[in-house]
Image 1 (spheres, protein in one colour):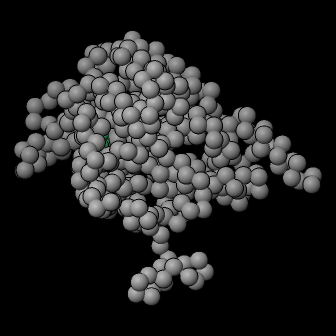
Image 2 (cartoon, protein in one colour):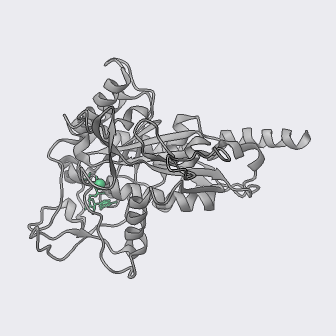
Image 3 (tube, rainbow, N blue to C red):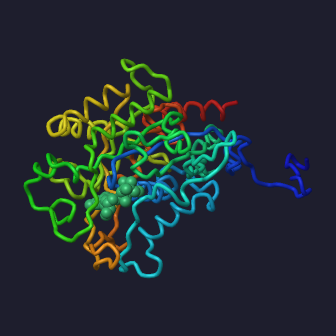
Length: 392
Ligand SMILES: Nc1nc2c(ncn2[C@@H]2O[C@H](COP(=O)(O)OP(=O)(O)OP(=O)(O)O)[C@@H](O)[C@H]2O)c(=O)[nH]1
Ligand SMILES: [Mg+2]
């Protein structure tokens, strides 16, 4: 051992850490900071990958600009896949007008790790981890610097959330049971009741039947996928059928750009407010809750089963509308292999709407991390603690 680092069997000093059980690499920060796990689940093509990339991209920006927090990769190499999604969606490799697309998440490949546990070949999902730390310009830096933490998220292929998918050798969704919060991505454009309720025409191939266009859809009702996810978590956490899960469940209603005519929200309004005397914004959880109530009423009207399934599943449910892209995809040129036209985006047009809000709100709902992003209540507590520090 040298400075706490071990030598390997060839006498080489090791600076990286691995799990003694599965032998996969673990970012260094995981040993120093408390962890916060978020799982993203949903039906096929509900928009999980686009949402994850937009959420991370927005969190990097919003955390720094509005909350004096640094949101950063624990290890860029381990987060490579999300970095690639982010650059495709927001930077375009060289031309912001060149159409891009995020491929369907595969059931195999580089976001899964193949390893051997107890002599059994096992596939594990790759977590993407980010550290959240107050920057020294934070007004309560001295009080909250120890609230830094590591957040882990997963992007599973949706097949993994369908009934019968969690095989012993492929426990790729077991993270659901250890999560602090679950985001269930619900796609209104795939629901015939939602599409029927939108009376004004919408120029999005996902809202109409267009021959030859590659619009992927779930063959199973999204409520059934939610039921399967909840049953799976209850089984893994030994929670009985009549007991509700403690972890918050956020129903993320995606592709809001396509169905926004059904609600009367101001898109430019962000759920954080400026106060005259602080350089950080105060998170407006009351506004998010107000919108959640509106969305709940809408869902109760159109898909009552989704609301009842969610609220029987968890003690703490919120409904948040987001758009990962802020606009509809375009129909790209025909793909010679599939013979169909894929849905594509020009990075220049992508302007996410509320993509980072489910994450910020989950911090409030869990209650455990609310000193990092200040709400009305925690800002007052932090000010009091800071004043006490100064007077000592
Ligand atoms: N209108 C609109 N379409 C979106 C948005 N986000 C994603 N899409 C479309 O939804 C489709 C599916 O998105 P993905 O993110 O690949 O879906 P997924 O849930 O990851 O799918 P799997 O990888 O199969 O699990 C894509 O064709 C996108 O064009 C959005 O915010 N608005
Ligand atoms: Mg995906």
